[in-house]
Length: 258
Ligand code: 13P
Image (cartoon, rainbow, N blue to C red):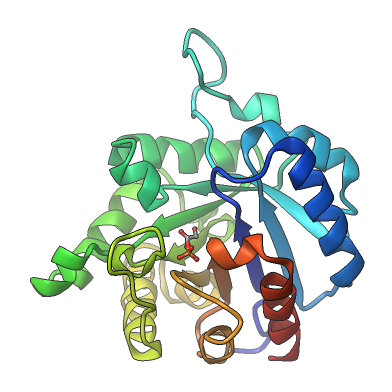
């Protein structure tokens, strides 16, 4: 590959931090993380914090991501937030996270609609995919990845595939799951190859080489170096460790050094 893809370090704060706490935490991070052309640091706070943090951040240092949104433009959807309401605050949006799929029963069709809606709004969707422990046990890892990619991307054209980021998050490796264990580098590389092979089948070889593929699941500052050195892995999507400044800042530093 001629030009190396940029690294992404994405903090998924999930349902943590009040708006005040988020603001104090951002202040702490901004004193410790210097802007870098090599590493894009993206913070995904709760929806309620997007607007105040968008006024606080230096956009050369951090970008913001939504954790969720609804794909319709506006209307009678009690409790939902539309992209038109957060468009000015975020550059990225996490779509299809396993907690949305399995805790909130989000459907494949909703996920596909969200990916397409984000692209229409000039927001980069970070499409999360990954097999469950049962899929893996039954030898269905590749099938699960194929199926989630095919359905999640089915509204994305060849021109637009470069606007999507894929995050491989095996459900069994996410710290919130019982008996979670971090994925081994070999598991991640296998999945990354399956992902790029399927993207090549759907969109061609060039798209498969260019698309950014991140890993997420129990990442911390001790496991991050091995993951970030994997060829074909373009960054990390981090839950728990992103809530601890020492952990998160160390991971960003590691990414800069790779
Ligand atoms: P953990 O890093 O806490 O395992 O969470 C991963 C995740 O779900 C990021 O989206």
